[in-house]
Length: 423
Image (cartoon, rainbow, N blue to C red; front, side, top):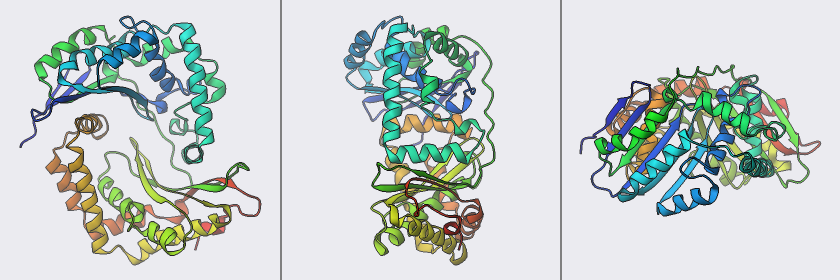
């Protein structure tokens, strides 16, 4: 069945995307703010995330947490939000009958929060607990350490949650100031997928769009060049050392983006991946290991993530580096590329069965890719990658002289050393 997509932009600059799906009875809607933690100033770190929390504490229509919670429960579906490096999103999924109520609630969040001071103080304490929880989770904290050092001096180095000492100072004044300059028509994108009638959806949005203040789109955040580093961060309370090994990669729109994703799958994307077989199955160095991709506007990182006993950390790093070198020098087997392509195609097709995933895809393509693609076009891009291209990308990405390592939970005498990163 051919894809039907309705795309429009208001005179004030708000983009609206609707993908009607007549074979489902649910609707997913997302109000996307094209500003995240990497758009914060040095005195604003954590404010994008702070806003994401505090708009739920009360709006003009739903003036306190009790009324807000009751309104969310009456939807019968789910409502949530998140803040990322480049965007913030308020979204929900409901049955088609509840779509008007969902749109009204999401619209309230992005246009009429009241930032009641006492509620903000309580929620600030919740966010401080979230920061403490992140610090107590090694996987989270080792990633924060990686980002802080991989793009030094860049807004990408900011923690999404913010610094504890800054968050403690945030209140109504800071919230209103950040909200008023950020939540403006040109910075907003609204995406919907499911049993949605575009004309009716547009009518539901009209009161919200009229409340959005005009403005100019926010400037794009610049990023510094990725920097190789080696960080050993001792933690006596941990039984394992948590590791992130990262290589610089391209941004969202780079032509090598698909090949890099396939490379990551061959390296550490499944049970037959190089790292899983080498580190877990052959040498029993860890329970889990994987490689992951983070793309941003003009940069990114391919990250190898694992945890192991502290006295095995050096060996794990050495064998990871050696496997990367083997991929560059020995090449990638045709069957490895075939498996990676099949996994990528499968993930895409499975995502078509979820209205939420389709809504997220719409927003990702519009915000980050700058173009809309059908499922067939995305699959064609995957199928077009050949072994020569993948070999070239591997030689450009998996360079040990660009490798960065964040190690949390090291011990004296068992730290990761520079010689562990070279062969």
